[in-house]
Length: 311
Image 1: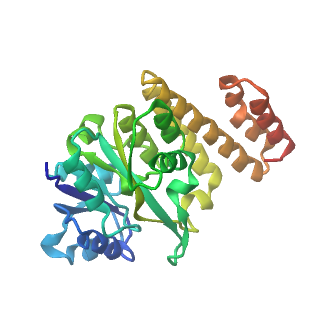
Image 2 (image 1 turned 180 degrees about the vertical axis):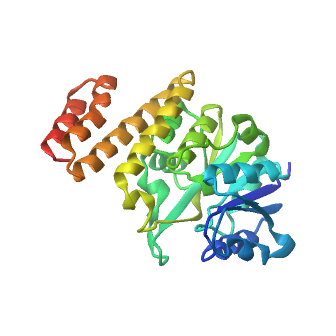
């Protein structure tokens, strides 16, 4: 099997960075079957930048409806048998598609693939790498023992990945048919929509290919929504995960355990954000469900720390 990749780039007011993202796809050592840019109601020159590539880029335009709707629209228009995604302010490493394509050609039993990536700031300085900064990533690096490729398949590996995943949207490769079966990315959520989809994907996967090499760059923005309004961002995070928990209630135990761990972390982060805003009672209420879900001294200590104003 020779996989054909449709690369989908959602873009909103991304004229300043979109060309870099597109160029990184066009420079792939394994050529993409097609590049689809979905302009999500931009008011700047985003569409003009994409249109400047002529037939090399398939440009879709839609009213502003959010990144999930944009990704889903790109997937609906795609004709490749595998989907890959890239946000307009990030970029691919030159062999990103090759790493996955060659493995898919060798092993048809892989349900989906992911991999490592770099964090960089607005000016391109390296901050770190994803697998090294997440427990699930360190687990897979240990299993790989220096190898470039490793398969995630045990219950413990799945639970750890769901709880604190290392592979983000731009390192994910998923069969187009599987994406359609899952209904794509959830709409109506502004935060954590990628976790929502990835968890549902992993819940039905038995073998996930992991490339222990950097497949791209994720840009950390100082003015991101999480930093501008951390309380609102963390509330939205909890709301998205609440919906995810509802939809995974009948999933295998490792998936439910991972979702529960992520939810506990999200409630704690919301409590911390509220605490920093001086809302101690609200902070304690935010983490109180953790005490009911996981009775014990650690959960009680979280509640007390919020009331004391210490996090």
